[in-house]
Length: 206
Image (cartoon, rainbow, N blue to C red; front, side):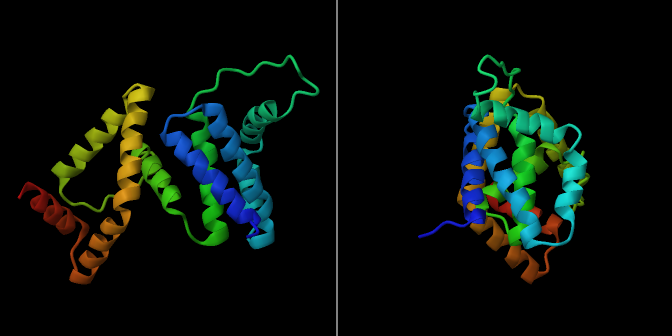
């Protein structure tokens, strides 16, 4: 079967996500994520005429593209700079590239793959407060407990933080459909997010 550009970008992006959560080689993650991002960025104006690609280009043009493409070009070519050296590359540098590619994929297709959803969940976990995500739980004691837990994760050394990330990633992939079913049933039953959490925690304690 033939492979279109969107499918090719999805496969590269999902492999980059897998490698990211495995805390694999950061340069390999960067290469795959940037390749996917570039395909989706070039594809976007052919799929949507809302000007978003131009807005995104303007936002990251000054530093973002230079930093991201500089690493990517270093890893692809050596004809003009055989003796060039690359600055130390931290594994988290690819995180923003994956995020941008995921955003573009969603705007092009109107959906996210399960692995992309899992990545977004992790991003929200790390940046819950900075992203100003609306808190739906009205149990303030539980809200604070979750906030403390997120702070503890952010404070971990990189290797330990990624061990947590990998565990959450696997849990998400395995249980997403079941959790979605629980949420849908709660909506049908008219349960609020707080009531749903109370119900689920009560079931675990039993």
